[in-house]
Length: 420
Image (tube, rainbow, N blue to C red; front, side, top):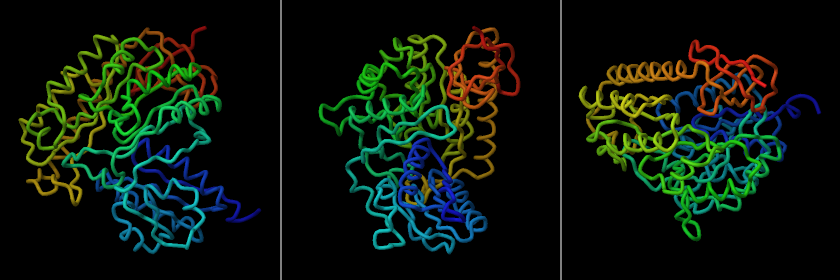
């Protein structure tokens, strides 16, 4: 073949790790359908900026690929399909459920919009991904949707209600990924700690992980996506304490450090819960590190309330921060609350990010002289078991796990020399 018909499918992915996972599934479906040269835009709707970037990417894709089909999907497309279909650059719009079905990519009826009621979806389709080209670790989806209704969040309306992947299917997919050469897997979800109540026997997340590790002993490293701090079950606590294959790095969905703001967000934890969870994890797994999501400038947030969030970075000992200035999403209760000026939101976000960088720098300095285990992500670069970025001397191939000694820390990166 020559020309556009032989061109590869191009996927532009925005947002979370789950989107990255689903993009690989869509790539396989689109290629099997013969959609050579198509551009798939997998959108995110967590912030107004994410949606703006997706629209910008769609326009750029049309300029760069004037004759190609452009398919738009993801959470933003699920929530506002007509808005994306109205863009002259867009060929088709697929919903979040439809995008994972092979038949959706064969143009049944040539419908320009194929988006159904996401709240009516009760199951996750079974599927195996062919891996992630050029990446050292693989993502494995174990749950989708969310039954909670945080006042700032539009995502349940893009993802639907919570539904879990059966444990046997998770083990089979993990075994498949390991057979492809992946030595580290990240369990991804919209609301990971809600795993299981919809399945027979109502397994918890910890029970599923324990059975997964027992069923796939050849899996060397396992990571978890974002955890709700008050929904960590006792089996997961035991794994944190005893399972070396579960990496010593937890990412927590904290969002704020002030009790009144947490209440107005309709979160399920208080400030003291976040501090207690970090203390318990650290007592069970000395040296464990934490990442966290934090929102700056939530409606009604005063300077004193913000200070509580800023202080939480130190009190919890957070190492990696994902900071978002609050973004009003149409249709959410928070969008109707008294808003903090945009300039204040951005200034507070910058202050939180600066605090995070100081904490990260302190952690990296603490690793000087330590022997670390690094997964090579690309030649000369990898991540330690604590997820710290590391520059490696030597020529270990992508996907290898190497032992190395940390010799320096500079510009947010460790420098290490492999040891035999």
